[in-house]
Length: 447
Image: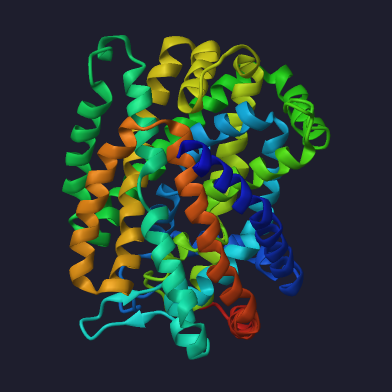
């Protein structure tokens, strides 16, 4: 079964890479790079400017971004980068950069659409995401795509990678070498998860808005110190990344295709651009204009891939552990921290991994719950939340390869309806964007 899942993941990502990257390139060209001109304005939006208290939505621009980032800045940037380097060499990082660049445009389109075509219930509850975009904007004949996304989302939102890697790094500590540790740790983690996710999006957003920035500063700050102490090694490390991206010399058999696939695959897991998951929370943001949230959302790939993933990659390459160690995932990153910063580095990484891993589980629980509500109504949400709590334990005890492949397969499937609907409705986004940018250039906006 494990071999079958591995082969299936490889197959679906072989054809998903050109779809994901090709769509991003289309969005870049079709928008004429216009969103990139308003990066400063996007930062102003997350700081609360141009917003009103009576804007429709569940969470603020900042909460929406930090909640979405809690699903992307985290183990995908810490353990995911290590896996990419271990399996495909440093060159995979270059292709992760590519997914981030095109992902900026992709997120602008997908998240703008999520707000444009979201559902607002009688009780004021706001629901967004690809399934509502398809339901409210595409012909009825396209509804199977909405159900397809939601069904794949039920699996893709399970905390496979996070639960597995959280337990792995805790289990690496000497005083946790006990029988059935993975099961015990999984049960404890499941209890913590239940206490947060049963409170819904508002509680998740409130946890994320302080936890994600705090842990990001701690993680990036410690990496920055390590890099400053090894300043002369940074450019050689970047050179290794670029050269290996086009040679595949670090991969068995020297396959450049393998490097590209792994880079895009891990990049998609890092920033989720085009997958559709991030639109579920951005679609619930309080905003007076969909374009505002599209601008906020496009900052995600900059933070999580271009900054955080690059920092982690440089640390691993400079430390040299990727050439010497047989460790996998988060353990390899931990060895890099220890090599460059000593025991303090390991302690900092431990704190960040636990915090990031937990916050990602909380965010993914919202993603899955949103898909469950679309398919089964409100009654399905509580049931699905208990399913997540159960699978925190399941994924804690299975091999990392199986856990990550299951999620990767689901991500690839979710991208299909997300990108079909986004490319289809791209002209609608351009019209909306022109209206917004014209108004923005004519006068200061305070709403």
